[in-house]
Length: 386
Image (cartoon, rainbow, N blue to C red; front, side):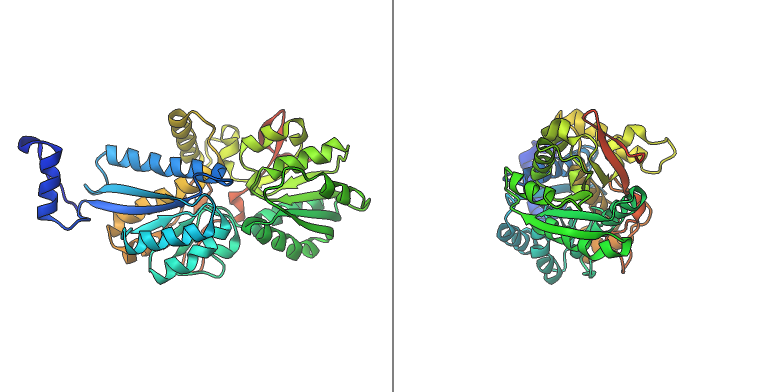
């Protein structure tokens, strides 16, 4: 719906607001989109870039005249990583703010807590968290932009097969992402002829994992370690392993897709192997790659505006917000039409990959959305094998 009132001749913004109030319902001329992110707290490395990425898109759209003449209002709620806050904010956004869709939350635990709220409120939720259980089984109104856990696990195990690795240890954070990934790894390992000698969960807030590393190192059968988390412990476990001279390969999940983790680990990060979206290596992609233009645009716009490195995490929200924008173009301020438009997206070039949703697939990505990467000289590069 397009509503536009020109007020320059009538005294500026105050008259414009008054006329809008008299001539239209409160929401006319504005489409509200909710966002639930962990902007502060221990998961702020996720929620901060996500909030900034989403706001950047909204600012650009509104500056260019909005969507069909309507302004987008992004209502950001900061959970600080707490699931109970995510639930409360979701209810508020749906029932009081009357948003047309919600992007986020940042973490898997929060997303699972909010999933039922979105379904009950018949409001589209595009999660920026990675756990596959968010969209498996499929819920009518729930989608997600990060790649599937199972794809990441598959790529790791395929590389282990090439390297002749048959016995491993698994470590994971005790949050939703860590637990879901650990379960995927344990389930898939036998398929690839890999034995899990030890599988441990640690406190996601841990600042020292040397005791855990000592336990793993004492089992001489272990040929490699897979760590699955989205917390600073990704850098800590690398440092603790190298501090005791344990040089077995360290694989990480796609949660490692922030250069700050490699920087925090320093020289201990060298050689870490992990699957991730191609944003991290955009300069190494061929011009014919169908994602490259989108990746270059996001990286350039974000880094110019915020003076910090773009990360895969911010890219998840960038994709989610762009999907909602495309859906609003077709469905306007109608929740049901917006949901249908999101589910109908095909060959949508995003930061995370080429998305094609369907009634049976609310992640919309294939395993090709990942590339294997490693750390060399403190930078992420495409992994070429050993």
